[in-house]
Length: 434
Image 1 (tube, one colour):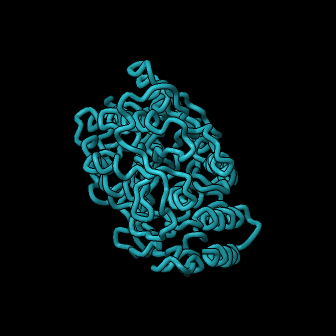
Image 2: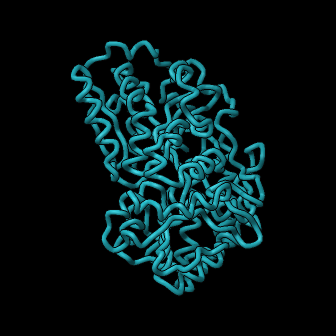
């Protein structure tokens, strides 16, 4: 466990760690899902907390690839403790968009294939507005004090709570301590140092991960996505152009490998663990896995993002929630599993063993978690203060407009100016549909 002390750098940086927009523009155009009132969920099915009692049979939980193994371990422990109620795991592809599309396909077909689903934090508004998710408000009322408020915001829409948070996150910068003497103070310095070393890898493929990565630069530069009322795009701004130009120039200058335009989280992690990068932008789950990789083990540390020159610092809230399909044939059984999987004890174990960012406040005070994640206090502050992505029933279209056009600019098929102009037109067209 002593190897984890490399991360004391993060704790030492205190309130600067992962906190959104320190010194920068505080307008992200995101907003809290909990404040969004549409009336679109009126009459949606609700799950009764009492239905957990004596629940039997089987339930199927669908998620993306469990690359860390924490979900499989959780299910194995639950099944052993509950012989009358067994959970089956169905894994979808690693790609978040494919996971999203598979769930949408099943819900449109009113399929009960997935009793529960591990959803990305940005899918709640879309899925809830379609009345695909069961209202879990009464259950969450019994556990509200367990969860960090910002994580509950990600499952709240139209005044109702549609799931339970299981994993939260704020992005982190991994760097090689044998190549980097002093962590850079700005993104611009980081890119320069990356060019002098083995480069920077991040999630540059045309999918949700690129939206997050771009917004981390954009929010730090003082940019935003939507107007305060959520009715108009603000993506085509000087601040966002500065952010995108930095990313584009990084590839042109060789600071970032061209292959990054095809990378998601796992390819970036594999390149990093193979010793092919000096810097890697990724999530906390990569820490435990990287400590098992011979080429980087004991040779890296993790730090909060640097400032954007002329702007501030920013992080974007990530993570996954556990939701129940309205087409589930055993919602009580699914709720019982969710209750187990999101318990403080289980969330703490996920943090201690798998470096998964806790959603339960008490986990950050657990001695075992503090020992395994010495940056826990700073990470908690990051989760509490990180910016959200835009909350909108048409978020998928908003995100697609961002990641497709940003990827086109990174790939060199369009200019940064034209990419933002096209994204602006597409986002406004999507907003006009509701």
